[in-house]
Length: 168
Image 1 (cartoon, rainbow, N blue to C red):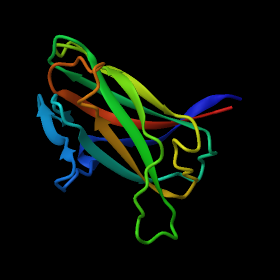
Image 2 (tube, rainbow, N blue to C red; image 1 turned 180 degrees about the horizontal axis):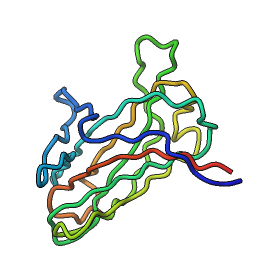
Image 3 (cartoon, one colour; image 1 turned 180 degrees about the vertical axis):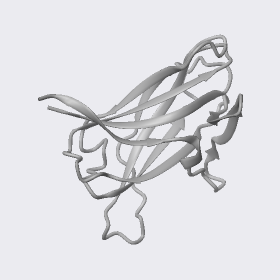
Image 4 (cartoon, rainbow, N blue to C red; image 1 turned 90 degrees about the vertical axis):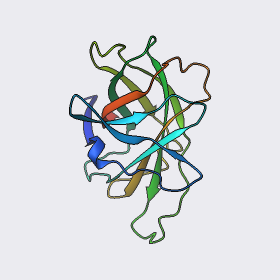
């Protein structure tokens, strides 16, 4: 039977922010006392990371990442990229080599009217960096500041990140 299951969910408090000069970090902000990851609008790319362990019930199916967010802007398209880095348990150095990044449009609500959402599909082994059940992994998100399709004029505020497995 086909379906989907939640693999992991993260809140802004679970984020790991870039701390080096080669990347610009998204940052933790608040909207009406609710925590959010803030991706500023600029000609730069802004990054945030989440870490986890792939649950044992993961069957190697297509992974989708769903984000929920909002903002205060005249238009509602923010372009977000996602990539997974597999860290096998026998790799003590946590080798950095992300799978193929997938760029997609996150349709956010405008003027704080309601939450919008977007889904990014990591549907091949290359896009999932061959992650398997029991593997540690890092999930990278990036707002693509140079993408002409990103018409969200203000900062994008993302409140939750969810990882789903689709299986048949």
